[in-house]
Length: 301
Ligand SMILES: Nc1nc2c(ncn2[C@@H]2O[C@H](COP(=O)(O)OP(=O)(O)O)[C@@H](O)[C@H]2O)c(=O)[nH]1
Ligand SMILES: [Mg+2]
Image (cartoon, rainbow, N blue to C red):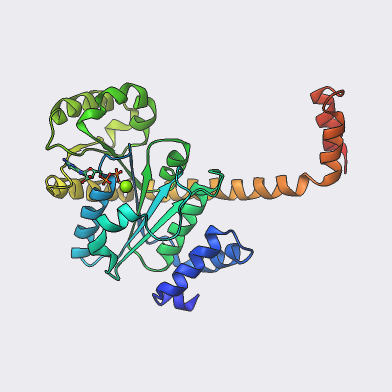
């Protein structure tokens, strides 16, 4: 633990493995590091595959590095069975940073189930936080349930779209409009970026909390490097907004509450379903009506 706090990458990687593999030590390690957590600014980057998320993350990372901040990047891909280091594509794209000690990149994938992926990513984020990374970026592919769960654990959510996303917007409207704190139309070097910007601004105007935080729409070209400065200003403004309004603290408390709820629920469920109760259920499935069956199971002690 001292090694991790002292900046040892080896120790950090080992601790992450404990969390990813859900070993018995993982909860102890996480709890003992708790006093050192809570300093990092957590940013989620989500959007359709190929929108340029990794390229943008690379640019954002560069800006933070230039100001001396250490950056942790967690790439969460629910559709991929690969885990461990960065995926090849991201590794190549972020190649400059790969040799940089101030940047830590980790890919996280499912291991057959998606259920715990968001929770594990959050815990890996906690470890990076304890290890002294100032900014933790979660890149997620798409806007499915896992992505939404990941996004719930960050301070600021960036939704990355491209000019062609116009058609998808109707479909994604409900989900993405709610989750985005800042919208980015990347690949604005291509046709249609302005139009999409207008459509988005109209949709965003209907959002409730617009009074306190007017959700900005940034136009970027990650490959050309345009619009990055404006994006960084938006990030800075949102970070200040969170702190000024106390949302920073209340969001964190909500997260902590949810997490404890889930941990208790998981434990209670796994304690409850012993072989006797499972037996009663299996024997009754064909003949006993469901309410009566569940009562018998609950009354079994
Ligand atoms: N024209 C253009 N291409 C871009 C831009 N940003 C990224 N790309 C390209 O889009 C492809 C997908 O980018 P990537 O960052 O991997 O997208 P991700 O799947 O969202 O992480 C790559 O070939 C990038 O070079 C941009 O602003 N303009
Ligand atoms: Mg990517």
